[in-house]
Length: 372
Image (cartoon, rainbow, N blue to C red):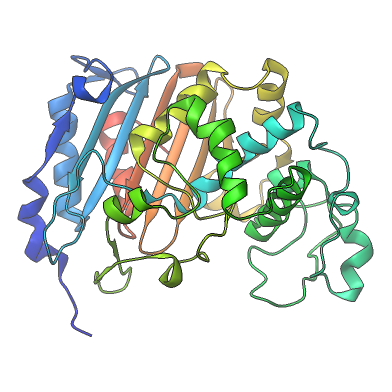
């Protein structure tokens, strides 16, 4: 395999397009930052270009929200560092674990429709066949609330092995994509649509169509095949055309924890719905955004990145005057990030086609104030 050096292609980062009115929003003269300052859109664009050049970021899609509205969207860089095809406003990225918060929103719609009870054991809907003998009884305690707040004790991924719970459900925190997929299977069964294309059709009917996210999907389709950018290997930067058979999901399967494909402007519509409390009842939003899993001072996530707990779908950073709701996404060749702060009516969405999301968010924090 030939190692590709991204720096050779850094000059292609400037073959960019800045989107304004054609994207369905009015470009503001200034963008309000998290720390009360103002930044001109052109200044932000130039800052992003410098971040991308400095850290060899092939391409990205970014959206900034002020006053609960989209004020900045841009698609920058290249889809593939070898072909040099530019990223544009139609480019689609992998959302990775940004799948989880929007799936949680979908699950709460099912709660409101009476198809799911947050506190009824999932076992009563659909027994899970994959638990080890010593965990089968405790597994009967798992509820949708525990799944969405990562309190089931299930591992992130079982890799085809029998599942041994790390703790009695509801008594600890263990980040788990496996648990999210269990809940997806329950929802699919309750709606008699299975957990493949039929579940994606239901998700789009209940979530993406009402929010105007016309090209966001958990299941591969023709639009994604035409517009998806290449991922870039986290080790050597080699571009990869990640299709279902070569990605982190199976063809046609709704992977609730990782298979969402989208881009920043569309995903920002979901964030705006969270900020404006649209699509769910006020009480449901309150339940979604309150702390369900609390991190003690010695929790590794609290020590490393300052997260204080988890709601139903989003991680949280709480201070005396505000709460940042956030989530990262990491499919290795694609990484993404979302955050929003209701008290400031502010949000950020970033999709990248490389393993450079952290560098991008750190750089953005120097321009827009603390973003993580």
